[in-house]
Image (cartoon, rainbow, N blue to C red; front, side):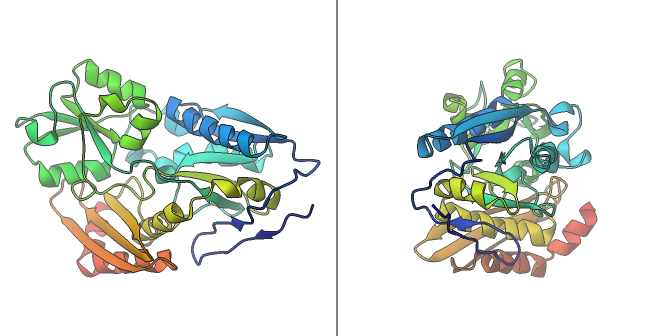
Length: 333
């Protein structure tokens, strides 16, 4: 059987669209190897994709290559000071380039806005809950914390929104995998911590969530809750096998969110959030840029045709810039 592959290349980010007709595996494609970080959450994500691929392609063996990235190794410094979340991705890309793996599974919020030459996003999977979760042993809601209450987070995005809305709270950095962060909370180092709801739910830890912050009160990171699958450019054989995992409705939302971050230089060094929803054929997106201390906070909304998600993200970025986002970004730099 001849695989018919059609790839549409958006202006700023390639995302392959491949026919989902039944596929006969090529003779040289009897095994797929997934590169993954070795954290519990990353392995859950890789195992989830492995199991779905095994169900889709029973004749194909799917293995996982577990790796420890530099971002996993350095835990005593905030990500914003050591290079950002791209540290979670680079080693996996090296494995792809060397042919040790065929695909890498990422949390989309960890994927840099610009991929290195020779790599492409083949899939953006259906999004889990995009909201931030409030976790505490003593309090039910953020608003219940007393003055001086200590909240832990690893994210400048969350920190800026916390400081803007709850200036009476003390915000302290919190690194490590999900289990490590929960352990620090349970040891009493924090009164509460903020984590991505998606990660807790995927790990079966949803019961630890005391309350969920609305996307209006805590705008998520671009791509939060969605999984992305990265491959080497030109691997049409792999792209064809992955195609059924793509979720178009999530993909257009994430593409719009990533365009906001791309235009504004979004990274761990920039407190920035963007969240899009698809309603009919209309894409609605909200976003913000702020100083880490919350002293400057710019929030805007935009909407447009879902057929061009990058244009919708660009419209939001332009509104933020018109309200003074550039001055905020320059001050951070």
